[in-house]
Length: 360
Image: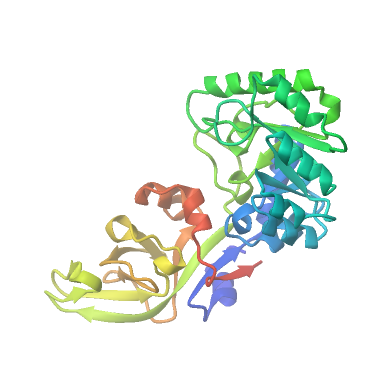
């Protein structure tokens, strides 16, 4: 769906809406699988990076080989759809118990976690710390890795690590971490594991990673990591309705703290997206939105439920749609993140729950 007329027909009347192209999610997933030649672990944690966990899982059935989440609650939501799921973060015993009977795989980094998983009949992915220092067994502690894998009744579905600098220009640390991981897997034996994975989006697109699977999060939603080139498409756009327009005379102030004062006669529009919806407060200094093809700068302080934009030189009326984030060029999540000092991840996952998701 490309034309503004078509977009308006599905978003019109909503104060603020995230338009999500599930076909683009599928296309991105297929490209990643074809490029890497490996199984795809689709990362759908944080409500599929804000795009809707259920809708994303449904869109990728038959394409993704495994779905990765971060919490037990997310795992239960994925499992309810019949999806094969894995929890990327270590869980407490109570959280693990809640997954009994679901077949969801959990992450383990010590013998206690492995014994708990075995007790509740859950498969595991063994976390190996090769330098991220977040989760996992130190790659040099082969004895501990062996003790975990040899826990009675344990089903070792996967083994993984995570690179700390895969989106940096220098890939030397990635290669070192990959070598450490490969050494650990060789000691344990590859045949123990259905999924062997170390590469998230950046490494998957920039290298030929070790293992038989890759994890795609950011790239799945069409946002390229730094130093990556690929024909991916951003899958969502955040729109806000123009609630009203007002004329400011010279010297009139706008919003909280009277942070903007008109110099000469100005026309402003109030749009229905504020920081409560995921429109960053930092946009007050550097932000802009697109309305009917016009670039409209943000003026004044961003409110919880709305923001002000200068439409003096634009053809704008009440009810029009403002494109806040998404698409290509200056409206992309990547470009907006650079302006505000954020990262694309935080912009996407920060889109509020009250923002209506519209799927096409």
